[in-house]
Length: 392
Image (cartoon, rainbow, N blue to C red):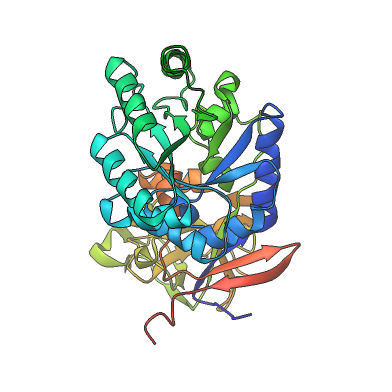
């Protein structure tokens, strides 16, 4: 395997499976899981993760945000259902039909164009109808106009209704009342579909990660596991003693330079930190150009030899400095933990998100292609991915 010294992210595939199993224990036996792997698996790597869990019997399939993400999964050999959660454009409808990719549908013009594409290629488009019960983003209303839309779906040649779903806006809050109100609207609407249109839609889903953990009554035919799949929490208000999660990703670099600074020396751009005493400073060759938040300037810390080293001054695009005065054993070449465990301590994405004014989802997704991913299973590296050869 390649050696990545400047910066690298380690993705623990065993932790992915642990989190899947931990979520499943909290579900009804017949409820399956959709693994949400949009934004390249929240920055963790959609393809390796999808291959690791595709054979789980309780995995229904995967969810992504765009047709391109869906086609990447299909192109890598993933065969279970892939649902696109957002809007899909007409240029891809025939390709979706051929690849059996499931779109979310909520506009009549989508239905018409998808139906034509399906008839043209001789394969039905299996759709999931999106219902807006309070997110106010996309989706049909759960009223008479919504019933008319479902009827239109039933009547459109080439269209097969496989699923119907909604999305909670506030399930990650302590008070579950708003989420329960959305669930009630959804169940009332699907009940009307059965009674008034005479159709039972086989795959109904509401729960996101927060619902999986704290809203058992919303765990219907399937649930959509997003941030919890990666061992991260939807919010600070979500109970952490119900589903035991393991963080999947760690981020590390190395010390490339150590210097002794006298009192009164400014560190980094703008001189926002000035040493008050003789200080031993280490330079780390990573920065916001890798997705490491600039908002951690003068706030965050890293772990070196299991000890905290505070960040000094502004984080640069490609480098930042830390105080190793209290870590006399630190030397050039030593591993630095930016995210993850080291000794008895650990730096979490939740901690970094709170300090930098971001949140854990965003932090994970923003670790960009300049950061190689190394995939580990049973303590051994099984795969690595980088983009350094993309343009060679």
